[in-house]
Length: 366
Image 1 (cartoon, rainbow, N blue to C red):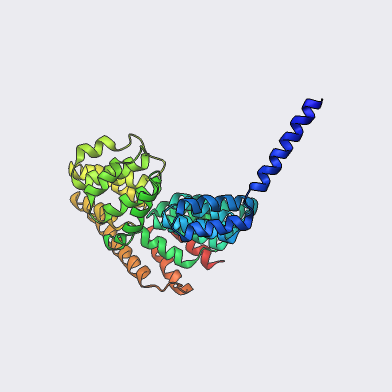
Image 2: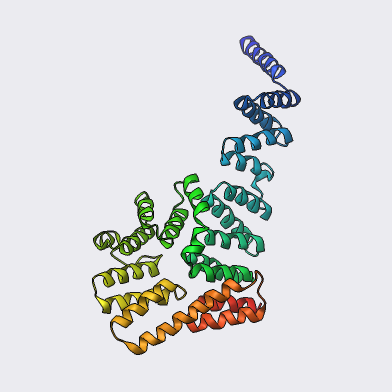
């Protein structure tokens, strides 16, 4: 008993000495500031971490870590500091907006996407979360995913008209418009090698710009993905490397990128002068993606080769309508009025893009 009491007393005295030697919050703040100002960044970070462990609300501790994250390009540190502003990971809209914004600014599109999806799980009607969620798919040049998100938004509220314009432009993207996306997509791929969606977006961008060799190299470096295989097949077919295109195209219809899959098969058939098959596959691609000028142009060519004059004439007129739609969507101001939206809806109806019609109607009828 006496021995146990002696041990307890000794342990208590040891704790008292330990705590008496621990620097207090003021000392840690001072030492961290001295280290930062003198350029000893590693020690400043270490002291700031200790400071925030003792005083999570320390403004100086957060400031040093935030500056440290920018100086060393460590976005995970910036996100960790920002998380401290939202105790207990409280699901507030501002939390998801702020954290996704930090992730976006550092090229971490995949992480930003996860924050926004989580935010919409808690706040499905929040307008700004919806806007950023839809815009991110646009930044990745993924019209299929953007359409899916717009349709989900239309079920819970009124999609912003400017994002419908963005979708229409993205669906008929050309090389000039794609070039403006290359820089931030490269940044996203460099920042997060596991971000397959941004990698595919960059591949699509390079393909549209005619940089097919770079596109193929980028997709060679991808981990296995059904969608990557489809785009790879398209890129090879556009380069005229038909054997390579056949080797990498999936053996069955994929769950995503079905239009690109049909387009690849159509391109292969064109190179092999199998015009009936080319027309069939390209016609399917156009049905799946009615606003693609390249799909429609290739489809028109296959019909011309088959001398199916009536069908060819009809499709040429639709191609002209699509060109008119692209031109009008580029001309519209950021916030189009209802008469302009009505005009776009009518053009989409003529082209058979029923999902786009659904979204525009949801705006008109809200």
